[in-house]
Amino acid sequence: MQTGMHTDTERCVRAVRSKDARFDGWFFTAVLTTRIYCRPSCPVVPPKPQNMTFYPSAAACQQAGFRACKRCRPDTSPGSPEWNQRADLTARAMRLIADGVVDREGVPGLAARLGYSARQVERQLLAELGAGPLALARAQRAQTARVLIETTPLPMADVAFAAGFASVRTFNDTVREVFALSPSELRTRAPKHRVAGSTPGTLSLRLPFRTPLNPDNLFGHLAATAVPGVEEWRDGAYRRTLRLPYGHGIVALTPGPDHIGCRLTLSDPRDLTVAISRCRRLLDLDADPTAIDGQLRADPLLAPLVDKAPGRRVPRTVDEAEFAVRAVLGQQVSTAAARTHAARLVTAHGDPVDDPEGGLTHLFPSTAALAAVDPQTLAMPGTRRTTFTTLVAHLADGSVNLGVECDWSETRARLLALPGFGPWTADVIAMRALGDPDAFLPTDLGIRRAAGELGLPSTPAALTTRAAAWRPWRAYAVQYLWATDSHPINFLPV
Image: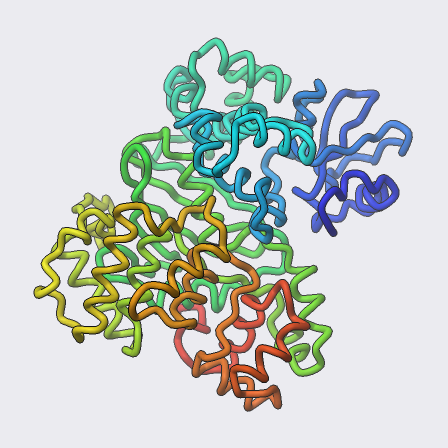
């Protein structure tokens, strides 16, 4: 699987004939006779090869005049793994589009964040994805609209504006064009239990992923490090508060065998697209476990770990700045102590929220609020206090940017230039906040201990040399090595 897979017609045809769900999101099949586009795993009888053509994105299919299949719902495929494993212009643009930047700031805002001209961004996306930023954002708006239509009782006008459409007419025209159904017909066809209202402002949906997915370290890590008031594990679900562009939200994420159950309560429905995107990033749901595990399995010392529990994901974050602050709070202290430090900050400086289910009380403090904190009130050693205040000052003034559009290597270098930032802190931020799939932690005590037990080199330099064969998936190798320990982060909470 590689960039431009849609151009390999023979391989795409084989995937369609085998209905291989691993390729969902990598490419889309457009049927010339029916003018419908599908995901590779569509359950219908495959068309003749001469009647198939392949596109790299749903937006490209829609621009070419194809409608979404009503059976396989290709718009609900997992996202392409490429946008999370690459750091080039196209991948950074796609991460920003998924985060709703085009809807909020337009194409000029997208280009400004990337440091390119709007024309350069347009040309690059057209060349690789067959659609420009407006078309890609439009396809995303259509999918958001479908979720709202099928899972909420919101009036259609409210759905239109919540999904990011400028007018109800544009909303109606887009839904008809993409799905070959009117908005009211989509709602009529939806299973009744999905439309039935529950708590006002609460949506229930399913987040798809490529199997296998091992939830143990993923949810175990999030639950074991949860900051009281901001996060909790309750009734088999990880719950947390979200700071969003138009307001705030609370999400409950429940692991399932073929999807993640997602229950969202939003103060403003316009934040739905962003909230879904951030939840997917948090749980690394667009990863390609077949490619990752296949490469790690090639190392005979790692292979038993992969075979024992395949499909490990990297637990990430919904807020990059929050994670960086928490990484500093966790320097040279236990997990429990780090949670205590973070909880004090939350209580003193976080924005309060109302949780209908109780348990969650605050948003994690914004960087602006943390930058205004009196350093003398921080119960930590002086050197770490300096590290903390310097980081939040740089985050608040924008001189350090941890957003989805940032360049991983450049950001890592900027972090290492800050006082108190060593390779471990910079790399754990790169791995869990920036999403670099190749971030590695050779100085981590748990990694060195696991390496020694497995017969791998245990000194940082020698282990880094050995780990070159694991690239570009060293962040996932970290998860498998960590899993050899009995720490609570490696176990799904009971």
